[in-house]
Length: 338
Image (cartoon, rainbow, N blue to C red):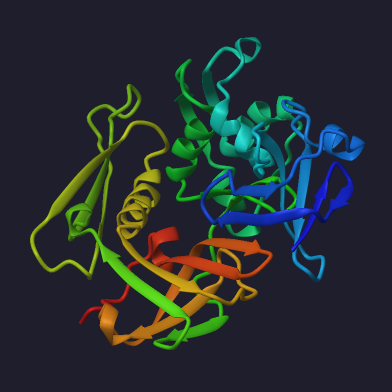
């Protein structure tokens, strides 16, 4: 791994780790090493609250993450200890910040997702990238959308983006990203039982339903009309209905909202894979998994939701978190347990 801080490549870390996330604005990283107060470079780069700019590359100089250092831990003891720096990708600041008072009012009338987003992120000097697959949905008008004063910007944007079934993430350059993953892409890797690989499957059936229905609250203009859309989850055979209410959006938005609810529920099915090898895989890649010990008797398609890599002077480790591809699109999945 190659680390650049404030434009300078740094090589004296004992341990480097990062976690890239598919559906989060804040992928995180941490560095562990020895701080030398007599070293001018250390004092400049690692000054607390300087929010130093960080770029993380592969050994082949492929950019993985652009972020900023936000946390510092230094120690002074008889026996010197390692210090730790950590931070997140540039849009992570949206998880910590509210809408500034000088950007009020909090109400947006007849504006689309792109307009609302660009207005809120521009003071942070963040850029917005909208994937072509969701550009039409990002342009749909919200008749009325209101943030609360205490609501974090990221939470508000995620809430309204979810009503369009749009995933909120970030690019390696640190741009805010609206997209919808490609579930049809070819698998990048196949995993099966073998030495050096640990796997586990987790299924939280309590959060899954056989039929999901979304209602739209009647507006003053629509009288008593309450458009309804439903979607089914073929993984659940028992009678377990769910009904949600869409508080804003157009009458046709209920279909997207129903798909988004299904996508959210499918996140209750996860696979974790730990390996002592670091593979060239990133969130959004498709992989296939076969392991009868975790109830996957045939090769089953999963999408990588997060990649955690830890490199030390003596070892490397990669942990992959996988979900069904439909957990990011709301499409109906195949019954992988049939």
